[in-house]
Image (tube, rainbow, N blue to C red; front, side, top):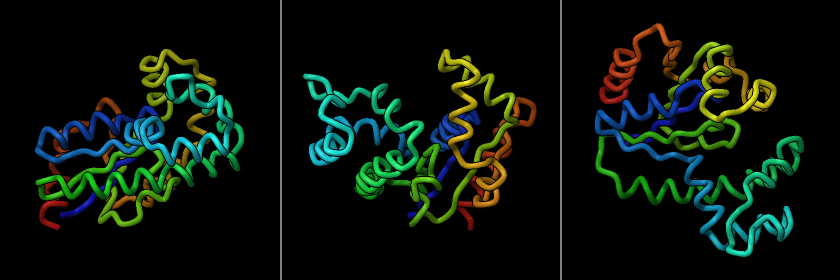
Length: 194
């Protein structure tokens, strides 16, 4: 079974595009959601994160304080790399287990930081969803009830769009003008027959 990555910068619409593939019968593994779940459920990972970031990272019920973790690692690239080095191997193992349970011609692994996390290794191909920066900012501000400065900072911490697009075999433009479904169907056919 082929394993296909799907990525894109914040606000690009990768989750929506992944949902279109899902409608075509393609299982979608959301790596970002899986990471959040594993940080709350995997005891070894929880312990490793506490050793790195402090025991107050989790509340009395054992739930991760994501806001605190974000504050600790957002402006500290070294610490962020250390957290990623703990979380991403755990997510990869979970993905490998998940893929054995799927029945489809291929599966999608959705991740905002697919390349940054090294999560593209072992994938057969990668799809990138892209959109103009101003539209991505607008979407994210509306979706997350955030401010432009915070969204811009997140975008600057992510891989440059041009570099990300070059690393992908397929690029889907989600600019609100170009029809998405024909692009998704074309990629779907190429992956199926490739």
